[in-house]
Length: 287
Image 1 (spheres, rainbow, N blue to C red):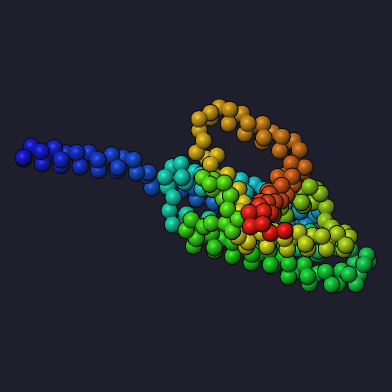
Image 2: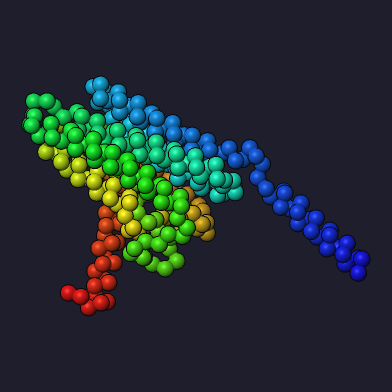
């Protein structure tokens, strides 16, 4: 009996030592925050470049758009690094949310206003310009508040389900993620090499795009999360080659590729909602 008890104590002690050995060091918890800090730095740089663009430095708008694009990359990496190193923490999650508000809320909203409305020439359609400028402020703020609400809902939701459920076993975002919304703005600006809108009539289209993107962020529609790719490591070499090729193509044809990816992702959520509504009407025998 005593021998069995001693064996149990030894096994318990060995398990405890094993758990302590597997526990990441305190320094490892800093690693994901480094990428989050890069996210914030890119957002701050995008804000300063948008201000510089308002002063007449047209190339600064493109720099701001590219900074937001790099921030999207940082945002995707910090979460994956935290999960890979088992260093997720409440502090890291809160810091990431605050970073997203700055980088994917404030920075793109400011860029969208200055690039799409503030730089309109005074002599072309002056009456229309006077009406569009205050609308631009309202719609850009609406984009910002929709993104903030999207983040708040994500932080408090537990296993959220979209209104139009997709394939069982696949993970979806409920509403367009705020980095994707910021990516839509940044990709359009970059597609035009930072050259601002000079026609007030085109600014109306810009207004509609901002409104649609803001709505999709606070909607309950499903958007593909891509999380199933994270755990698929059966063929790591092929995955690495495909990733390298994708990066090379995007870098070579960044204007076309980035706007295609951003708008394609936006449209995918709309098409998924329409397809679900159509299939549901068929099941119910409506129409």
